[in-house]
Length: 85
Length: 388
Image (cartoon, rainbow over all chains, first blue to last red; front, side, top):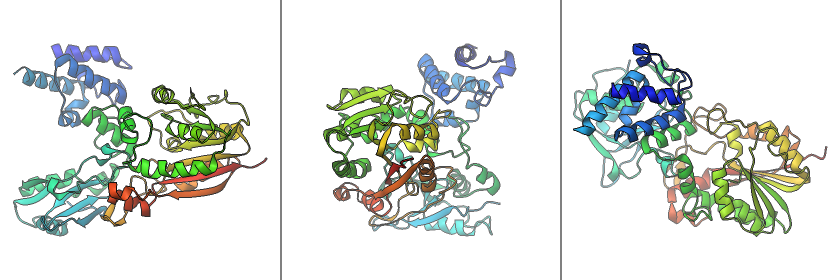
């Protein structure tokens, strides 16, 4: 939940339009939907990495999951867990 | 059906110490894999015999990298030249096929593969190859996490930012040529406008020849460097070149010469999405600012050879040109497009040079020297306005 909140807060601050509540929001392809652009991606990566002390790998960023809000939260969960371990 | 697309070429890279080394290069996708002859043989037969070559193990090598990270004028071939640096893989058949597909040496669906040659939709898009700017931006942002502006400065300029790096083709071609060219073209008291002056290195060069130079650039970051290093006779101002009214502060018929280097290409393929730059507006401004009989000098990357892979032996290079009129990777306009855009605004071409590196560069980078000596990487065109 903590990471979902972090992601939702990021999009609330930076997105061109609002992210739907609940599962509908998690299914959004945030780039295709125009919520953020390529410059926004760079900001997003940097924000999450510094907030959570994690580093996205090239594979993370190339993955299908990275492109949806829900998938992104899943990646944050995994990276934060392995960072804490 | 799994096939080797017709876009793939094979190059022998065997050496005395490393025998049986081949490079398979997809010249459209600009992707490569190092192969042994067993894999070469498999590729030759796989379309007719899906089980060709058996189950392995197979030897191949990871050799591909984003070679332009070392510079815009670095070897653009994207495979490691030194076979000792190749990363060896010993793969099962399934792993080998997957590796070859990753690098577009094998494809399952040629129609789907062809559709990949389109602009990237966004920074995360790995499906579409996109143009050079997009590939570079993606690599710098996601793989290297580096600021492209910082990269651009470091790959072109010396650390003190006072001159172009002589150990690059920028220095060996552009600077070397301009040192001689400005000596013949610039005279004491001339008024020059350097449009897209960047960090002002060439503005300073022209001022040292006695010109009064106004350097114009839309980037305050570059202008800060220019102002810090300005020599007497230069002045630097921020103007959004190519936007309507942007150059209105410059009086009509005030310049003997307008100089642009590595700037017109951005009116062909924008540097970033949504870039507001209209070449007709720019050319009308240039026509207005130039004195009658003045000179418009455009020095641009070569419309054919820029960013094309350097192939063949070090001293006997060849190139495979995969696109010219309709570019999906390239970022430089065809020559006819560039010239016609200018001549239609009331200019005539009065001279053209295809520029080669200075001889000193052979010792620094023999491959780059020989390639650029045969296939020019820049041209300079002089235009003069018609009187009416």
